[in-house]
Image 1 (cartoon, rainbow, N blue to C red):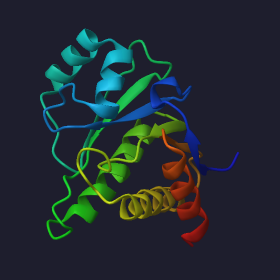
Image 2 (image 1 turned 90 degrees about the horizontal axis):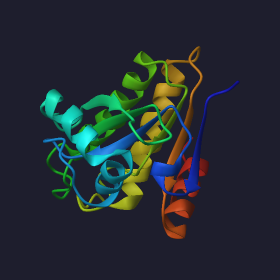
Image 3 (image 1 turned 135 degrees about the vertical axis):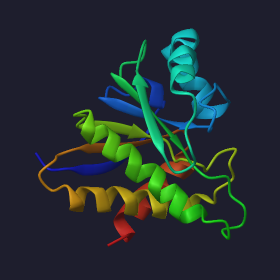
Length: 173
């Protein structure tokens, strides 16, 4: 089996994968958007308790909890940067959020993972740049871990985001 990256127009909370990634805030508290949907479907009380035990997570890093009521066994909480115009180390922090999520998935023997497009919602990261960083981080992980096979699925809700992701996968060499 070969590692691969794909984009699906679907609700991330419905993915039948080993782990899904939550676009988390540094407090690991329930938020809006993807984060709110994950907390709601996983079981807000259980997930809140698990996140409280961890205590928080720095931007660019990731932590893991059980998936509780989700189809996924695990939730990896990755904290992406807030877009501040591109002059505040945002690209490196976003890349690291993906890289650290993938390393955590490997450490927990996850061979399939679902990602949102981290930081591109309320954190305001421009979608084109966010896709390029996401795909590069995933491709670098696959290249650096050739003996570890993983399916990486980006779950997006809009047709526009799906097409942009698919174009980015095709165009990045």
